[in-house]
Amino acid sequence: MSIYGATAGTELEDIIRRSEEGEANGAVIYQALALMARELGLAEEAQIFSEIANMESHHSGFYAVMNAKYPQAFWDVVRSIQQAEENADSRMPQTIEKVRALGTPEALLPQLKVWSLSVLRSVIMAKF
Image (cartoon, rainbow, N blue to C red; front, side, top):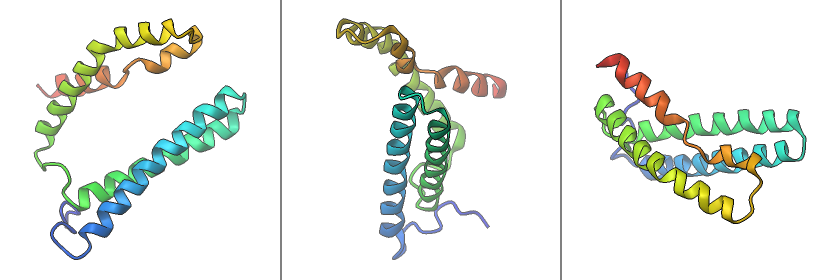
């Protein structure tokens, strides 16, 4: 049995939606804590918070699938994400220059680069 849409349209849909939102927010918070810990030289703590962020993200995705938040047409969704990543990637050089103009240390700028685009491209190209 698939979990896709299992709670969509049921009395659990709102609870699952709020759970998904809470887990997604938690992923952002834990990832921020991981980055802050890394800046403080707390490598072990950074790793722990990064792992927690990944778990929270996984939970959020699980709930999103349960509520059928995204269409079930897998490759259509992947293509849509690829387009969004390409759009973001095309704006990134301008964003980096604006951040640089604020006097941000060069060491922090790689954090602004979009890395997921190349991963998406390789996944899609392998299929088509």
